[in-house]
Image (cartoon, rainbow, N blue to C red; front, side):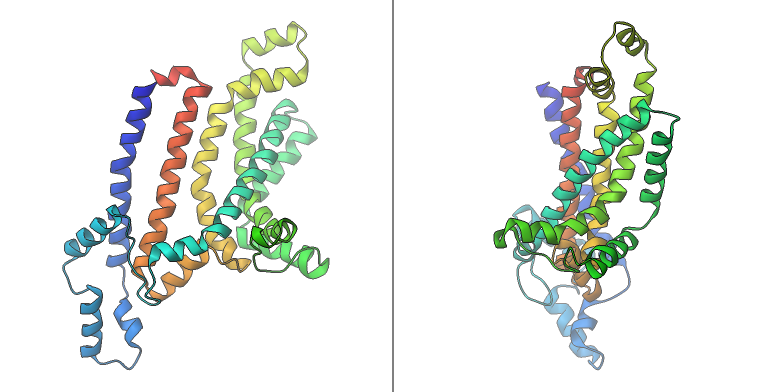
Length: 313
C-alpha cells in the first residue's frame, strides 16, 4: 500500500514538469507581444524594445524558461506585467469565488447524478430510464453559456428569485452567498451531472447483470440494499474515475461561467490576462489549475485502493 502511494506521488513530479514546459511554450510561441500592447499603438520601435528588455522578453527562450521555472520552484509565480502586483497575490484574491463555484458544482452534480444513474440502470428500458438519458444527452450537448443565459432569463429577469450577476462572499452572509452562487452552480453542474449520470448508469447496469446480483435477488435481498451495498459499491471505480476526469471539464467551464455571471474569480482573471497578453498571470493560473487537476486525480487513484484492494498490487 505504501509503495503504491509513493509511486503515485513520485509520478506527479514529471507530469507537473511537462505541464510547466507546455504552458510556457504555448504562450511564448503564439503570435502577440505584451510589450507592444503596453507601449500602445503609436509607440516607436525603440520604446517597444526598451519595454521588452525591461520584461526580459529579449532573452533567449530557454533562459526565460529557466528563470521562470526557478522562481516557481521557490513559490514565486512572478509579477503581473500590467498591474505590477505579485501573481500569487492576485490568485489569492480571486480564489474564493472559483473555489466556491467548483465545490458547489461538484456537490450538486454528484448528489444528483449518481442516484439518477442508479435509478436509470435499475429501471432500464422504462420511461424513467429514457427520460434520464434524454436529460443526459441534452445536458451534455448544450453549452454552459447557453444554459447560463436561459437560467438567468427565467429565474433572474422574469421571476426575480436570484441576482442577475455578481458574487457575494460567504462572509457577507450565507443566504446572500447561496443566492449568488445558485444559478452559476446549476449552469455549470448540468454538464457535469449529465456526464456522471451516463457513466453511472452504464456501470451499474453492467454490475446488475452479474451472477452474484441474481443470487442476492433469489435470496430475497431488498432493492435498496441490493443497489447500494452490492451494485453501486462494485460499480464505484468507473464512477469515481469519471468524476476525476470531469474535473478538467469543470475547470474549463469555470472560465465561461464566471464570464457569463460576472463572477470575479480565476476564470475572469485568466480571460483578462489573455486579452492583455499578461504572461505571468496566464502561466500562474494555468499552472495552478493544472496542479489541482493532477492532485485531484492522484487522490482518485489513491481512492481506488479503498474501493478495490486488488489495485494495490
